[in-house]
Length: 128
Image (cartoon, rainbow, N blue to C red; front, side):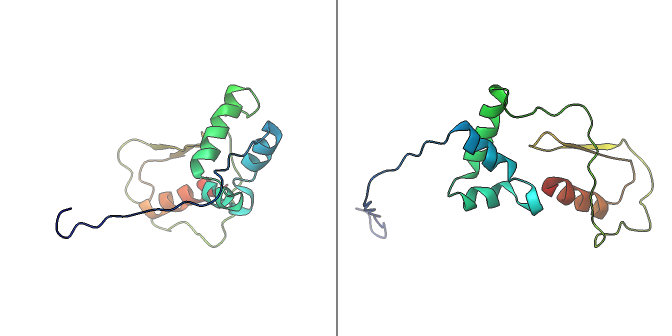
């Protein structure tokens, strides 16, 4: 052992648990994401899971045809009275911004939209 080197020991008690999750339970958990602003992390913690479980289950359910694929363009109603858009837009130049999200949603912003407004919309779309 080299000087200054610490060794870490880990003792694990109990039985390793592997849980079985029926598809109906997985779908129920997946549907909780976005309800009242719940994120994937919130839902995973609530059910003692990792975020990767949620993403894996979503992919598995899509493969089985049990989770809907995004169909074309969808407009979401965003209720954000406490997040007013800035009154002065930046000068319009460049191309429109298109932001894709892991959940399949796409946010399209016109050229010249203020960065602060784009960030606010991103937060709203992620939690919608």
